[in-house]
Length: 146
Ligand code: BTN
Image (cartoon, rainbow, N blue to C red; front, top):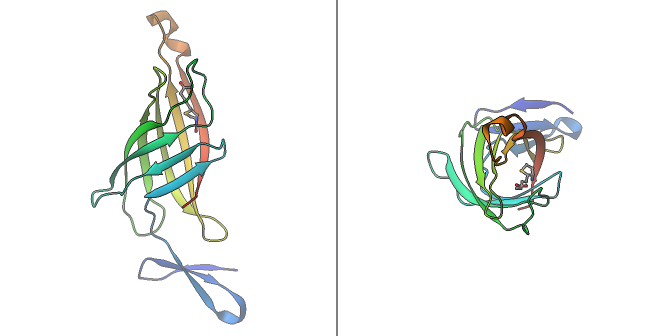
């Protein structure tokens, strides 16, 4: 199977007998996503400038309090090649922490949208000498739920 680019923002996946399956290469984060930890997020409509807001439903937490859905705000590029970069911040409502995610949209082998992301999670510490241990980093992969 090969892939090609067509001029109207779609990709051609070469299928049997020289046929071409057109797949959309646009990347719009609007909708429901799930990551490899089982966390879910809902992105409300991305506006014409690429700005969006939404809710994050984390599956895991290091906080003492019960997990609650938390607001996110972010922006994405609107390139038509399906490989936009994006970033968003989650302000956890049940914890003093803040998370930022940045990443890029790709098409998986079957043409499905895959968001590769890297995050920083800043937890609140009680003094400057503890600053060194306040930030964690990691990687999450999101796929679309709907
Ligand atoms: C906290 O523990 O203080 C708040 C919840 C943090 C959840 C983190 S953010 C990065 C990682 N990816 C997820 O989907 N959840 C965890």
